[in-house]
Image (tube, rainbow, N blue to C red; front, side):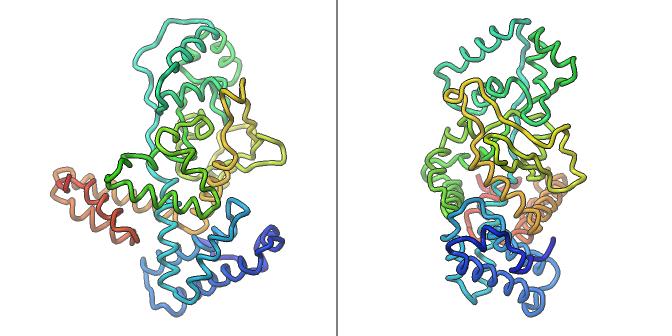
Length: 371
């Protein structure tokens, strides 16, 4: 978990920004908070480590902010000037409602239960389109639309979907020529979990509202309207990915960085040893029909990339994965319900949330918990 870089190392866009003075003031407050945690706070062990994560989330968010409209975010920091505990609570807020959002456990599309007879490519596309006709937007329809748009391939590795290959002699020949085939999945940029059970009065409603409030601070208030409800399955929020790539993407270990060429991205990994599983570092998104099959949204990808950088530089990603590993180990012991309190206590000691609703939802997940 690297320390926040000095002000002199801030990127050029901040130095040239019209609000550079306010941005630098906010960043200096983060540097002061980091120093206070390390040398004056009296924090020790896990408490100190978590406080540093909360602080560095704020600092690295300034450094890697995903849009030009950074004003509301830095003003929030400046307004808290001098109140260290309040700044830590703000960092925790972004930890819970931004970083953890993108690292949530997202389900993958199951394989079809039956294999249709072999058919031509045109027949295959026609069949999928017929299945999609008047179908309500959901994970399955999103996957099928993404497959058509992405040419039945993983957008990163160009590996073909195994079910298509098995049912198309054309794609079987192409796959054998070198691209290969395998299981593909529908990868959401913004996770489906945002809109999970958010009906009025539900316990997840407050969580979703807090997530959208955070994204509003990024100057993207339109996101809530576009991605609300079934909108989370809109085609510009999904991509076809191979299983391994999807796993890395969901864990914020890989991300897409826009280039000067429209729809061309640099595919990057957080760690050099995390294999990109592709021969090219660049990915160019294409579509047979931009109106019917829109490409992945550049704003969504930029926010995901910013979260990936902030999560790993701040140490939050490592912390979350450690908590999830501990939870999984404890859950094995808690299958009979006898150790449910151990699991609950482990979660709370690892994540000091600022929203009581998060705590209540956690308790409900435990064996023997309230339903």
